[in-house]
Image 1 (cartoon, helix red, strand yellow):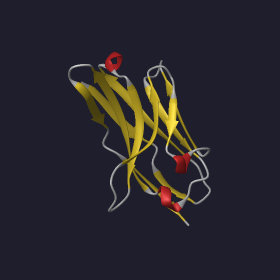
Image 2: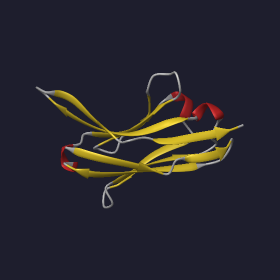
Image 3: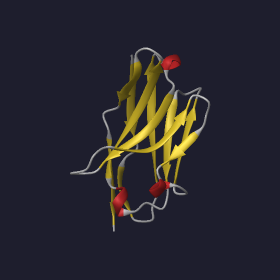
Image 4: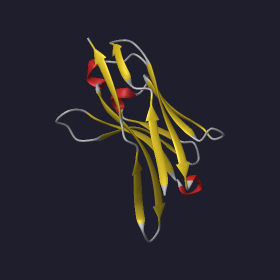
Length: 120
């Protein structure tokens, strides 16, 4: 089992910055991928950024160059630095941890979510 606790959301004006944090605990060594997802009202949850166990990162096109995902292995924490925020970034942001096994497939763990609101 993996437990995830997000923090750092809030209200910010367009062009501003926020840093989200996600404290990871439990079966940390079983995790293959960490990521941030978001869900805006009336929309499906979408991936924002991921970082693999090897440190490779990937971002959705709309946040490339503005958001940065990183991890602190000592603190067991994953971060999402969000710069140049836009109103369309407004959503509940969820931390995700995934394990991938040959026979059992992918299993996802989710945090409780943190609200990010960007005012115009």
